[in-house]
Image: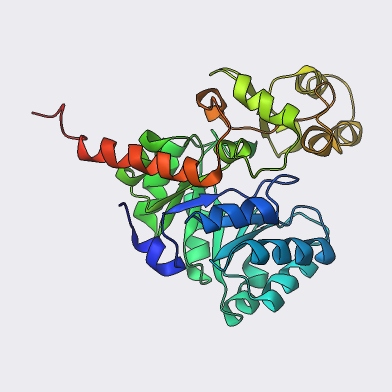
Length: 314
């Protein structure tokens, strides 16, 4: 069985994280992934302290294994959910959409292992300096908010720049991707889109169907004009958003057009006005499975790939 230093550091069986996806990664999904041996992660998204406490309670009812919370630093509730994770002493905090330095001291004093998502070498170095346990190097192939660099380019540069463990994310959906991540210098992987179709994922069935029907060119990136590009599955909403980006509409109007679109997709299943965030690996996903089966299948394949990695080399 594949085991890496991040397994020992976090007390997990498999070096795999489930991504913190807003309106999707709740206590039920996180609990299932952690119980299966990975690191389940609850998304604090734009919700308040009460919501997060409730989801932490749900996860703890499902597993006694470590799980994490993802905090989107742009959230208006970032300060209060940062305090909640410290009070609840969750095992791991991952962060996105910003620099978590101002919270690091309190989290570390609470015994929390902080693992920020980074999209550049400079941010990875800063996170190491302020006490991060590890970093998640996420390439632009991922779903949701994306950076410019691809996973293939970003991961080895981050791995060379820091001495803390590196988790690879973006464009990883099967054992081949896991094996490739290890070859690039990562000691673990984070998957989001693949867990969208876990049986325990409570996202609307229309959302799952969109992922299951996707092909290799099913996603597109919008939002560059506003400085926070997002990858999602092509549909009438995303195509209209893309058109508006290059029209005379104001930034304020464009921001308003995007408001609530993920909720409409994830909770209501609105195929016309919802934004179905998904990574480029959506075209590789072809069936719903229990989280445990997803993890075990991925790592069986990764072991096969790694064991046969030199068969073409003379």
